[in-house]
Amino acid sequence: MLVNSPDSALDANLAIALDALLAEHSVTRAAARLHTSPAAMSRTLARLRRTLQDPLLVRAGQAMVPTPRALALREEAAAVVRSIGALLSPDTAVDPATLRGTFTLQAADLVGAALAPGLLRLAEQEAPGVSFRLRAEELEAGPALRDGRIDLEVGAIDHVDPETRVEELVRLRMVAAVRPGHPLTEGPVTPARLAAAQHVAVSRRGRFTGPLDTALAEQNLQRRVGIVLPSHLAAMTLAARSDIVCLVPAAFPGDAPSPLTGDATALGLHLLDIPVALPTVSVGMAWHPRHAADRAHHWLRNAIRRTLRTPGSPTA
Image 1 (tube, one colour):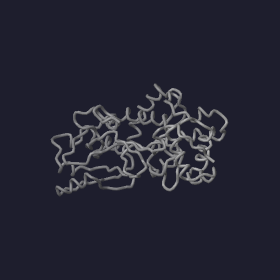
Image 2: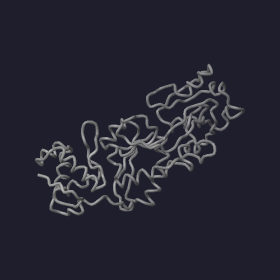
Image 3: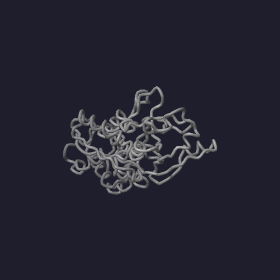
Image 4: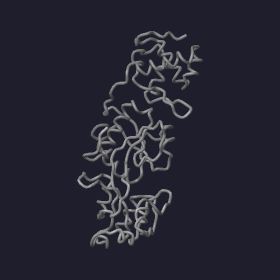
């Protein structure tokens, strides 16, 4: 039977309760295992969360999943007689230089290309034991974050899961990218001239239309999309070698250039303002709350902020 003391002193009963909770991933089953009531076990879990300064078990659909902190404690909790003080001490700050392991991120190719140089530079300077795995957008991000198949999603966050934490990093506008000497570089770019040019659309689902088509239709104009590609980098490469027009994200006038426009600049593309109103583009990151208090993941999120945010962007 659990002994619930009124203070926060460390005792073996807390370690026993922690072991049961991490083994069962359920307050009800842990209570049955220790022959106590679910209400008492729930109070003990709340006390453990306060003591360890970590949520330990986080709701994921109908189940509960352990946080990285909880997984790290599981073996120690199973051996109650060892290192009780270390087992129940609050999580402490992590020196990035001591981190070891691989972070898995999911991002579109344009975002991944913008992230990679900055992340590698920061890791070399601060966390040389860290490596990164970037995955294309082939996974449904919500379940992948929940299941731990990815640590972070970066890009246009379009899924709405109540349990997912989302943070906006930067807001950009869309511009037209064309090769040097393209006809659109001569004279003002009007909606009619833009619509008359041949375009490439970028869509993983193979869609020919997007916000630009909606805006042009309001002026009784229709553009010609000659090809749809799944990759922004492939679309920009095509634009650099032909008269195709490609849309790319760019910083607003007066802001520092965005890293997301770096590949267009490297290809020598000219960036032209689009003469119709288009929605802004929000680039953010999403993660599961199991990582909210994890110090290693905190370093990762801060590294993403420092890599993608431009001066003047909101800070967390």
